[in-house]
Length: 136
Image 1 (spheres, rainbow, N blue to C red):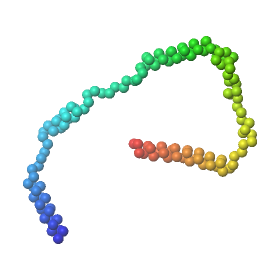
Image 2: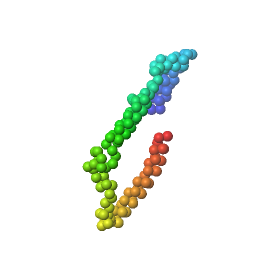
Image 3: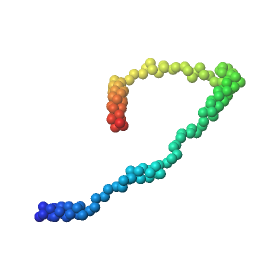
Image 4: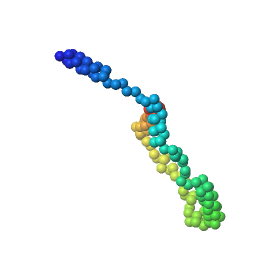
């Protein structure tokens, strides 16, 4: 029964296709489409303009440098003059590594850090390869 229906439907479709006219595009179809695209395409091309121009940046750099030189000449850069007289900057740069003498770490922690480092440096090339595959 299904085969008989399929044959009838196929005969019906073939008859309808024979009766239908064959349409073809006009001779100047491509030119019409291109004209339409040109009309819709924006004629103005975006041109990058920085927020702050190069002249303003240059002026700001020169002004900042001049301000630093002026403050340095008025206040002084020695730790005994001006604003810096009350600061003991030598303490800032002393290294206090005395706590490290009595420090010991377990083997598990060392192995853990080595394993994490190994996994990190193994993932980086693998991820780079994956990104290169999918990006291009």
